[in-house]
Image (cartoon, rainbow, N blue to C red):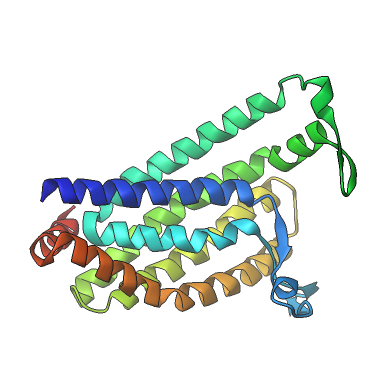
Length: 252
């Protein structure tokens, strides 16, 4: 029984950390959600700012998965498990950025710098530094938002669980995700662009609203996935061990 629970924690934790790391690094790409889906960009007006549309970082593809994994880990391993993995992920993300910045300072090999491609000649060193050289405030904002979002998620999750008990997984999981994603959406923008770049606060809030609309829709849309994962884990653990872990999770 202990081996099964340890293996489950390892698998959930590894997937959680991997997605958090990937979300940070693919987040340097900004994509148009509407054009990706084949629609014309929306022309939204929020707080007086016009021509706003769903131009999002690619990281938003994975952050909903991270928060779903947070809720699943919370369900079976409690606050202690989520906090341990959140701090681990944050530490590894910080370490990864340090290593990336160190690699940017390395002198490139002459033959590697210029590369002929179907799109013309590319300066590989410039491209590498441009893609991975995120600003310090963006990195700080992202890490702070991640940790705050995780801690808020676990708190709200257990608040709802104290009310609903073992029933209504959708309420505590989706509800905690919606609250934590709301805070995450604005904290990262506030630190990275209001403090770090001096943007107008109304612009920061307007972009935060656009980002949260997307996250809200995705969180609701992915709710059935929680039940599927929950079902698979319960089948793997067996009824007795599953109920034992969920009970112990409420005490941690």
